[in-house]
Image (cartoon, rainbow, N blue to C red):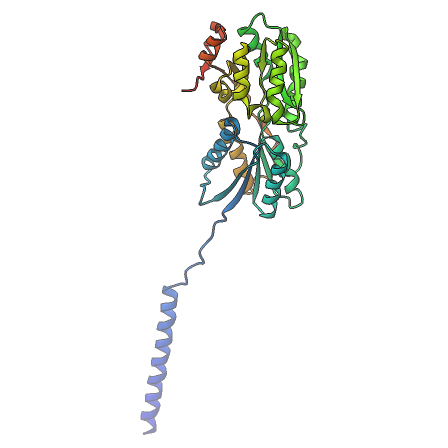
Length: 335
């Protein structure tokens, strides 16, 4: 009897061992799934100083640059886009709002917005990317957690273009905002180099956009031979109103980029702002991914410029396009 009980106990023990072994085998066959990996979605605050085609093109190009770098809007990043309407106080409020929102990156389109973003981001060390700034050094945006792209004007190319189209011209009028570092820098370069092309510069400074059309009236009264437009945001914002006055007076305006020529300027030696924005977006992608800090990326410029002409505007002013200009010019009449 005891022998039978021992045998039964041994059989039961063996069964338990085999069952436990089977459970262990099953666990090894079905390992636990690894935890799902999550990808950070970046929040980008875009502060655009005002609405006009050049700045709009910078923003469009910026998003194209991010996409080209492999970042998809909605999947990899979200954009909080705000427009200051050429108001410095609103500009500062937008930048402070981005800081409070703890965005991953601030983007300043035009000098006032870039400065506002840099000031608001400094305490939290939020990286700032700028675009459409003529002189980052004069704007004190050449050091710290900030970088971007400059739209420095090809001033000598513009002076040469005006001389070729108007061989007898003497005085060039320019309207600029005295508080915009990019405009102050451009005026200084025009005044330095104009004499080499036989021109004098009649520069009129304004402090607000409301003063721009009055400044245009003053230049018309001074009987300038031409007006050369900068990338000055207050001026570009009311360019259509200026053109109405100068067209009536028979004074040609030279733009600083293609969109101004499309609007009615006779010609321009300028850059492509979509391309400038695209270049900025590629830089921003490196910063967001941690591949480089802003301080590791010196600000960039576009070395190449284009010659843009508006044949209708030239004809209205009685200006004949020389063959030397025509062969490299891009027709930019608005369809």
